[in-house]
Length: 89
Image (cartoon, rainbow, N blue to C red; front, side):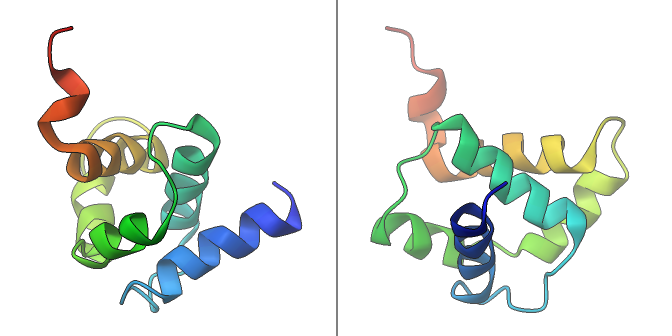
C-alpha cells in the first residue's frame, strides 16, 4: 500500500463521519475495495459511505467466521452497489 493509497483510505474514513474508526480491519477493508476496482471512487462514493457506520459493520463482521477485513469489504461492496452487483446479465 503506497502513501497515496493509504491517504485515500484514511480520508474515506475521516471524511465520512467514521473518524474514530481507525482499526486495522476497517482500514484494510477500505484498502481491499480500492484495490478491487469494484466501486467507482468519487464524490458519490464518499456520500454513500457517509451513511454507513463502519464501526458497527466491523463489530458484526468480527463475530462471523472469516477475515474481518474481507467480510467488511464484501459487505461494503454490497451496501454501496446494491442489487446491481448481482443482477443477471
